[in-house]
Length: 305
Ligand SMILES: NC(=O)c1ccc[n+]([C@@H]2O[C@H](COP(=O)([O-])OP(=O)(O)OC[C@H]3O[C@@H](n4cnc5c(N)ncnc54)[C@H](O)[C@@H]3O)[C@@H](O)[C@H]2O)c1
Image 1: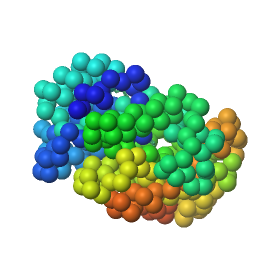
Image 2: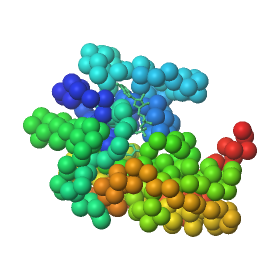
Image 3: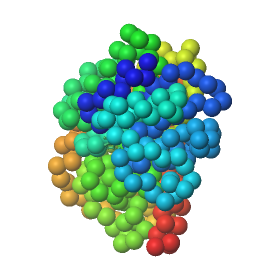
Image 4: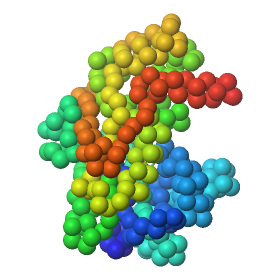
């Protein structure tokens, strides 16, 4: 069954997708594609602890760090190369594939016509970026393979994921990461979104937990195959105010750029009631706790520099 989903046209998959051939309660054999990014490395670390280093293969097309190379199991795997993926699945007897591989552009499986506050699991999705179009394409393709061939396809839609290692530049939500670094260094920042732009966000640990939860959820609990997961939504102004609890002199100036238009087309919040009801999704980290954790992590990082 796994072969049927491996013919990829784009190196992107719905937010994340999980395909399971069977569930060996104790030791599923897992392949993570595109695993050397923001989400793949922390997920692999968790799964290495949970299922064993030999059972979880982190793959990507980039050179792994020394830490990954020495402490984990790494393989080169280009998701555009069908026979290479097929060989890995067969030789390593893979049970679960977690597809992370992506070329991140402007994010989002939703579009201007989607409800924004909040966006439900099932609604009109007309994204206008190749990233968004390929996400929706693969959500539908995965669900087709589930209905037609009983492939155990599971897909999560995430908000922007915040972590200490996330990039400060480039994205529409990277202003949030930059605010923390600037608060710890210069004490002031320039934000390219309006102060009242509300967007959904999630702390990395909750994101990783949601993946483990849906992978391990008994099939009987799942009433659909694609789920929104959410944790919090905040504006630049609300984030800055929370940061001021740790750095009272922190200042923000606003110089709006093209990313405002992109943010205005995104949902302000994701409706994740189905994930909560069906398989017990329960995020732990709110805005106050996210800020506390970022400060703790980044303070240590900045001191070490
Ligand atoms: N990080 C977030 O805030 C966030 C939010 C929503 C959805 N997502 C989705 O979660 C997934 C993981 O996100 P991330 O932040 O870790 O992304 P990332 O950009 O940090 O990592 C993506 C990885 O994919 C790899 N890749 C690119 N082309 C490939 C190919 N042909 N074959 C194999 N690997 C290839 C890249 O080398 C990179 O390491 C992506 O699908 C992304 O769209 C992430």
